[in-house]
Amino acid sequence: MLVLSGIAVVILGFAFRINPLAVVVAAALVTGLAAGIDFPGVVAMLGKAFVANRFIAVPWLVLPVIGLLERGGIRERARALILKLKGATTGRLLLVYLFVRQVSAALGLVALGGQVQMVRPLIAPMAEAAAERERPPEDGPLDEATRALVRANAAAADNIGVFFGEDVFIAIGSVLLIKGFLEQNHVVAQPIQIAVWAIPTAVLAFLIHGVRLLLLDRKLARGKSGP
Image 1 (cartoon, one colour):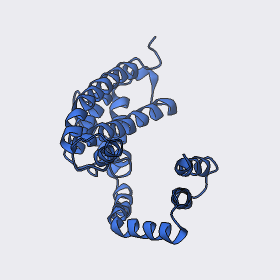
Image 2: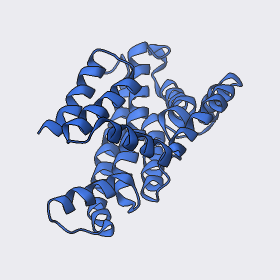
Image 3: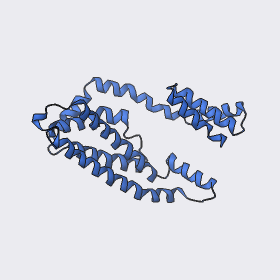
Image 4: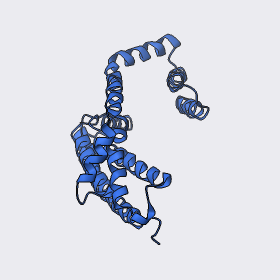
């Protein structure tokens, strides 16, 4: 059980708002030492993991591009686009994005969307514009609570889509983690079997959250003047 002490380090570190990088490194060191690995061995494992997965830092190069696009007015253009589409509501828009996000994640394209590169500059402004158009005129512009609700649902659509869609792809880290865990407990399962059993869960997640998004439309349409 001492090997799980790294989890406690992560919880305490985040609770006290310590630098996430320092927390993760400290948790790795504690876990390795608790597992009986000497300090040089733990450091060597950390270095090997960093070198083997250095491509993970590549997405950070996208952030300056996104900043330039936002400065150029991409959020305003996204809002203008959605206002021109008849029948586009907040729930329908997010339902379409949920479907696209989940299907793309199931095909292994988990980097196609994301909170930073897709939700904040595009999906959230479009959802807010749709909510403003469907809002009763007597209620005026969106209040902060409603705006936060729309943004939260936009973020949730992305998270739910990628979380339940990626397990359908056999070469994703979560599937390989499940396979490794099962093998440690003497259960033999191929990645394709794990991916197939993840399909019903992904379908149910889409249906359940899809209903929630359609109910969101009804809530936004009622506005302040509704019951």
